[in-house]
Image (tube, rainbow, N blue to C red; front, side, top):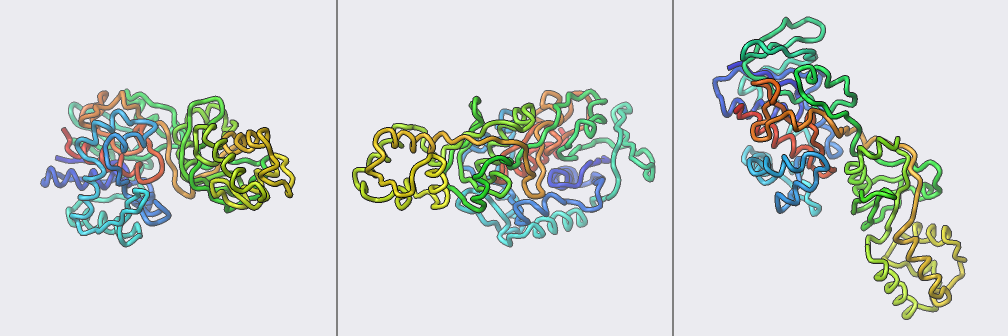
Length: 404
C-alpha cells in the first residue's frame, strides 16, 4: 500500500509513524512544501514544545476548543492527552508537567521531539521530500493522483492520502481541497494579542495581573486567567483565550471592539463592595495609594485610582459609599478600546479550514473523496494556548493513521 502524507508538521509525522505501525509493509512518503520539517514544533512553547495539557477529564480537555469540541470529545475516547503522555514516555522521552497543566519534554527543548520524529521516520524508511507542494488531487477509480507545483515531480498515484497541511491564512490555500467537494470554513486568525493604541494603560508595560476576567463588551465571550500589559496593548493567557473564543466575531468587527476588564476576577459585585468596606473598617486611616485591594500590582492600582480621579492623599475612611461603588466599578468593569491585533510570537493558529461536516469523525476520512484523510489544523479545529492544538494534531493524526 502506497500512502502519501501531505504536510511535514506535527500531525503529518505522527500520522506517518502511525501508518507504519499499523501497516508495516506500507510505503509511506511525507511531502513538505517548505525546506524545514516540523518548523512549528520547533517554536512551540517558546522552543520548549508544549506537547499537550494534563487535563484530568475529557470534558475539561474538550472545553479548550472553541471549534471542534464536539467531535474531539468523541475522538478523545480513542486517543487523548493521557495517551499522548504515555506515548512519548514509552518512547524514551521523559516529560515535565507544570502546575498549570502544560506538558513539555523534560529536556525543555523541542529538538528532543524533532530528533525523535526524524530518527524514527528514517528507521522506518518513511520517505521525506522537502520543497514540494501538492497543487491538485485527482480521484482515479479507488486511487488518488497527486500533482505538484513546479512539475519537478511527475503526477504520482497513491492508495491512501492523509492531508496535514496545517492552517491556511487565506481561503485560496484551501481551494484545491474545495474542488474535491469539501466544504471550507473561511480561515481567520486565532490566538493573538490585542492592540490598544489610544489607551494610556500601555505605559504600564510589564505589569502582570494573576486573576482577571476579560470579555468583549456586548457579548457573552469571556475568558479567565492572567494578563500582561504590553507597550502595544494586552497579552497573556486570558487575552489569548479570549482571542481564540472570539476569533470569528473579532474578525467580523475588524478587530475594533471594547474590552471589558475585571481586574480581580470576582463576578459578584456585592462581594467586591464588601471587601472594600472591610478595608475601610480595618484600615480607614491608610491612604488609598498605600493599601491595595486584592494585592493588585502597585503601578496598576495607582493608575486605576488616577483614572477614577481619586486624590493622591485620599484616605480609605474618606471615600464613602459613592467612593466604594466607584472603586468597585473600575475593578470589575474597566473598559478599553481595542483597535487591531498583534501576532502571538511566531506561532500561528487559524480558526477555519476543512469543515468537520466533510469528514467522518470516527475515521478522519473525507466524505467527498474516498481514501483521503485529514489531520491537524487543516481541519476547522483549534484550541486555546496550553498544548491543546498539538493534542488535536496527535489525536486526529492517530485516528487517520488507522486508514479505516
